[in-house]
Amino acid sequence: MSEPDDIKLMERCGNGDRRAFEKLLARYEKPVFNAAYRMLNSPDDARDVTQTVFLKVYEHLDQYDPKYRFFSWIYRITLNESINWLKKSNRLDALDADTADTASGPEQEASNEQLSEGMQAALMTVSPDYRAVVVLKHLLGCSYREISEVLEVPEKTVKSRLYTARQLLQQTLTERGLHR
Amino acid sequence: MTIDPKYFELIQAEIDGEIDAAGNAELETFLAESEEGREVYEHLETLCRSLDGMPSIDPPPHLKHVLLNQAPVKAAQRPSPGLLQRLLSGPILGYVGVFAAGIALALALVDSDQASSGALDDVTGLVGTMANPEFAVPKHGTVFIDENEVAGTVTLHSTGPILIVDFDLATRQPVEIVAGYSDKTIWFNGFAQLESTGTSIVAEAGAVTLAMEGKRRYAVYLNNPRMRAATIDLRFVANGAVIHEAELEFSEPD
Image (cartoon, rainbow over all chains, first blue to last red; front, side, top):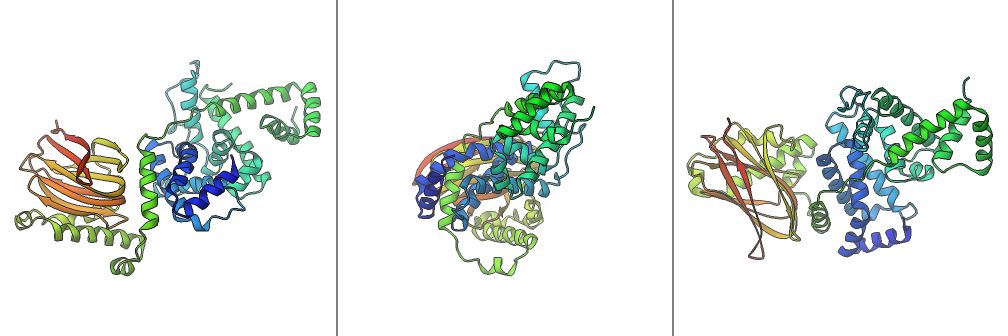
């Protein structure tokens, strides 16, 4: 994550440089969309949240503090917007295992696709706070320190949330025969 | 045997690539002696590999243009709130106000022949239906627009005889959209906007023409009293040239 570049691009955006915004988009559109998708489990909702995130970035350029890294700012907006979206659509509660079920049975050998679908369904069974750490760690490749920066919580909390989230996921996947 | 919680932490740190040399040495010793520890390690590693292997999804192709088109325009156009918005400051009232403004705009601009036919009498009854832009009514199709000048989606829904054409678009310059319908029994029944008031609409027999710029979400309501199959032809025009054409189909209910 080439930080100086991001900050320079942000400054240029602030001066109305459209090409700088295009470059930021090229860099962050996909991770933002994917993070929202994993949080919301809906491509349509992820699209809307991505729109809101970039609109907010553009509208709040003047509020960006360069002492923080750009990615932590945009990922924080993404996760907050995703959680707001869940609140608005009354989907804040984690789904129970049956509701988020997939077609695979315990006796089936899980294909990669099944595993991926099962994993997404399992993700929806954990609360958004736990989902967020998993998304940051496994989808966006953030370190503990980076996750702590994005979520504005101590690293100790990050480790503990990750641990609990993984335990819950493991349990759900084992119940569905997708994890031994 | 119960594993000391500190080893869970070390196992997790090792798998996450966040362990220091001392921790690593301690973990190695522990794993060499504990079968249960090795099992916990393997399970967690397998889970993490599966999580890392979750595929990345490509965003819809038109999204980039939507994002590009919405942002600069929004930043450049920040007019001071109008009287209506200032008066109606709460979020719910704000919605109603915006819709009411949209309806007022539609009423003001709509073709006088149709206005006099009484076709707009029911419009006020539709004001509330846009409060939730996620229409909980049947969807008949969506077209994706991915041009430099305009990008986004147009979706056709219906509820009873009412056709709802939901526009979610972003443009980087003024764009005119002509939504034509050849069936003469269909008539314009209303217009509502979400979050903005910058779209103008002119309704004539057989077509509605919208003019917009920036990021806009709005819906055009058409009345299809006989619920016949219908085609809505969409034509997007910028600088006098047609930049995109698309069709939305409504099929007769079974």
